[in-house]
Length: 457
Image (tube, rainbow, N blue to C red):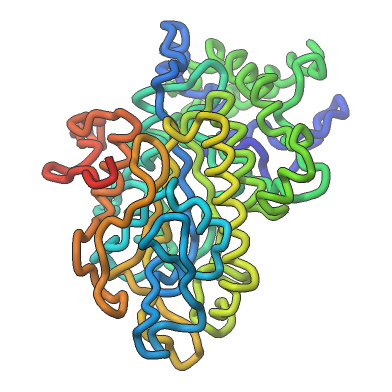
């Protein structure tokens, strides 16, 4: 991934202390390996008003369907849980009381209540399928939908096509890929990763510095550092990345020091009232950053709500440590999502961006309908609810239904492949498109016979 903010700092001999620029995509980022990107830019493949965007909210841990958006108030107590349904601004649609602000905007989103998958009930496989549409097999990693968009559309001007906030998914127990890279497309189409917490005091992205701060001497020293790497690694010298360094180094640096993108990350431009409305936490302010990025030309933003399920409060409510109790939905996780999601839809709508910005929110699976002995719910990929808003989709409706206890789809089941196809359709990507896979074998962006969720359009 192209990391905009690496974990460790480095000190150069001229005294400059910067996040590791080499680590911003590693050596591949210095060369950038983006001939397609800059070729498209040179040929004028830039934003038009009809271009579509996407904000993908990965709700790490897997929200419980019966405690959030598919409540079963008439089921036995061990099924219905501790929360009550509330009415929304759309007659006939009810959601959990933990989402009072969402209830005021139900006309802007649709609930897909029959999502399911048949793979193992582990976080990692769910992450793979919900972000790529496919389960990884035989060592082949499929690309994230945002990375497919990067490959096919390239950037708008100097805005990276796909940004991931605030950090990549970390350990969730399976030791498997999470589906947040470009996979077989190659690292040049990986997302740009902030890798920083926007809720920290004086948040900034160090590598987004104005060009005037970078003297000619410092630029020269960076080039010398690059030459040292070239000289020490013979294999790298003959690689495609190395051949691209001289042509693309300046353009890569220009991309990183873009005034427009510096402004996108500058939360000081937003009022305290706006930050409070989104929520002064990693997820809330990441959603605010996403809105600012979409406004400035980023095509796709992925936001991880949480990065692990261990020893922190998340949607993963097994009920006992190191996981979360079901009460966290009322006290922490629910309000965090409610404020950020409602504010994001409000802002996109008011700024005229919602129609051409698809907002998808999903976990990697649902939770067991029956509460377990620890007072929580366990993994359940057999049924859960997703949220779709904007991007040409209809709001104010329910697509599909689960059975009387939220255990299985009763009507209109939806697979991860259909979710990916829906996103592709919204982004105006031809579903027949083939991508160059491993050993040059063409791979379709979605499998044959898989269609978008037609009811959403």
